Length: 106
Image: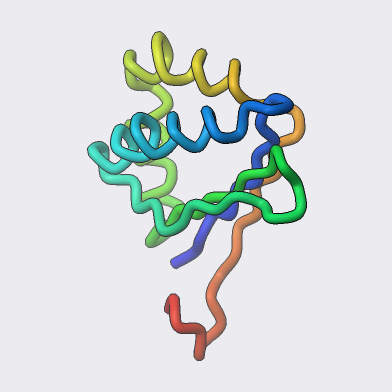
């Protein structure tokens, strides 16, 4: 099992709009296709920073869920374009982490 920690930079001054879109559209859409979103955070020290986490059982599941989400017509035609309009995509940082044996998220 592993987690993906995704750090995004919203367009200047648009983080609140981004959070609303994530919570009302992106997360429900991804969850409806099986994605396990485990956390959503605003950066307390960066007014445009946003972090969220997703959990995967293994690489095979991650690949299947990525295909289900990012190859979906709704993502390609509606959600994806809105996401890229609210974020600065080139500032996205994705980190894969594996919980330690005693981690509470194990």
